[in-house]
Structure formats: structure tokens, C-alpha cells
Image (cartoon, rainbow, N blue to C red; front, side):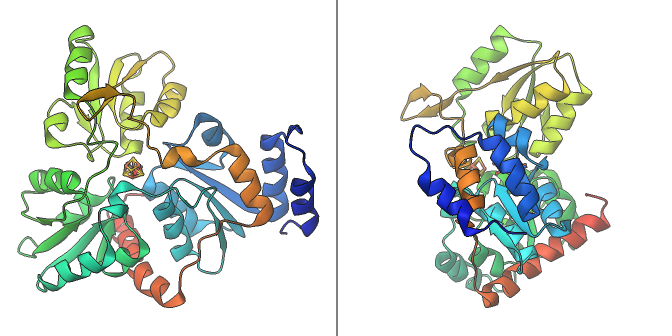
Length: 333
Ligand code: 13P
Ligand code: SF4
């Protein structure tokens, strides 16, 4: 059951001095709307704590595909919410802030990617899920950081492949699989900015600490890591080594779940670099746009919601469903 107009009137009548218990209101609306709240591990702690499911990109796509809820509230970034819409075209998919983009998505404009693809007609297009629906529609198979290696290994070794948009993840996968995939020149602004100098300082101060890294990091940073994997994989690894200390080369929001699973471990985050100065730019500016207030307002007003043309959805859903099938076949979720 969806909220009625009086809900919107209630918001309108709130003076700026009125305190709203957003958590309580979100719980109430969730029941009333039969909504499910999905959150990525990079969300603020309070959003992760209130979500029905917290996960990595693949787990959240799987949750979105399987949900019986009428409404999906996606607390992550836009490409993730678009993925949920592609798998549930008839459902209302809300995102607290439509400006929650992704630098990888921005680095791969669909028209330029189409032209690139046309220059290599004999290549299969394997695309990281961090891209727009329009780029998904130009792809043969979508992958996430947790299933990319296993899916690529299933493809014939002589099959030529374009991998987009993350050149660092692509280079890591080339090294792991012995492939020579043609790489699109995109990067994640968070993972490419970690300061190697600060990482070395941390490692010198805490030589016992285990370095764990997301594969969106450049190769020179991955070289320090004892474990490389998706957000879920990094969390699982830290839980398996509970009581240790870790230097974490990914967005610091992940530490909330890590600390929950292994409260006796110590976690160090690595500062980023920008313009030669070391700054705290290791938080994803897009993920951090979501707030409890925006979630509440989105649920009341049914907006912003993900809207895609039916024709685009048909084309973009295909490679996403292919990923889910191939991923299931190899026992990943
Ligand atoms: P995961 O699929 O590992 O959760 O990564 C998503 C992401 O955006 C990393 O920057
Ligand atoms: Fe995109 Fe990087 Fe933010 Fe992940 S951390 S959503 S890849 S900008």
C-alpha cells in the first residue's frame, strides 16, 4: 500500500524547527508501502543499520531480482538503482538522491563507447556494472568485482574481449586470467587517489597490519595487498582473520560492517591524494549524498524514482540477466 497525499501534506506542514524521527518514519513507511530498503557497504552507518539488506553490487542486484516488495528504495548510487529497475521494470525504484552518480559511469559516455565498440566488431563486450543503462545496452555481459574473474574464465580463451569502463580492474583481471582484454580508459576517483606514501607510512608504523584492497585500485597499490576482492570479499576475509589489524584500501564506509563482524580487529583507512596534497578524499562523494532525511522524503513523495524507456530496459536487461545466470552457474550467489 502506497502512502497517501496526506503524507506529503505532513512534510509540507513541518516547520524547519520540527524534529522528525526519520528512522521511525522510514520504518512506518516501509510497512505501509511494502518497500524493501537495499544499501551498499559504502553508505553511512545509520543507513546500513536501517536497511533490510546490505551488500555488494552483485548481492544487491540479486536481492532486487528476487524481492517480493512493491517498492525498492536503493541506498547506493544511480547505476545500482538502475540495475534494480532493469530487473523490476514494473516496480517503483526510489533513490534518495538522483545526483548519486559514479566517476566510472561518467568516464564512459555511451556515444563514445558505441564508436569504440564499432571499431572492434570481433570483440565481445564485457562491462563492469558501474556504468549507465545505455552502456549496459551496448554490452554482451555485465560483471561485478565479485564475479568478473569467474565469468571471464568461462569465455573461450581465443575470444577477443573489450573490458569497460575500469582500466585498473581490467588490468587486474588481465593479469589474473592471462587475457589481453582491450581496456576502456576509465577510473574510480576514490580508489585511484589513495596515497601510496601514506600507505607506506601506515605499513611502517603497523608492520603486522594486513593490507586488503578493492580491485578498482591501481596496480601500484594492489602490489601491497595480501587480499584483493569485492566489498563482500574484503569483509569476509577480515572476519576470517578476526583479531588482526588491517589497512583498508577501499571506501571507509565498509569498516562499519567489518567492525560489526570482528569487533576486536583494528582497521586503518588510507588518506587520498589530490593535487599533490594529502587530503581525506577517500570517501565516495556520490555514495555519501544519501541521508536518512532524503530517504524519508523519497518514500513520502515517491521521488526521485528511476525511469528508463521500455526499449532501453529491454536491451540493458539482457547482459545483466546473462551475468546473473553465469554467476549462478558458478555458484556465486
Ligand atoms: P562492490 O561490487 O565490490 O560492492 O563495488 C562497488 C563499487 O562501486 C566499488 O567502488
Ligand atoms: Fe563509483 Fe568509485 Fe564511488 Fe564506487 S567508489 S560508486 S566506483 S565513484
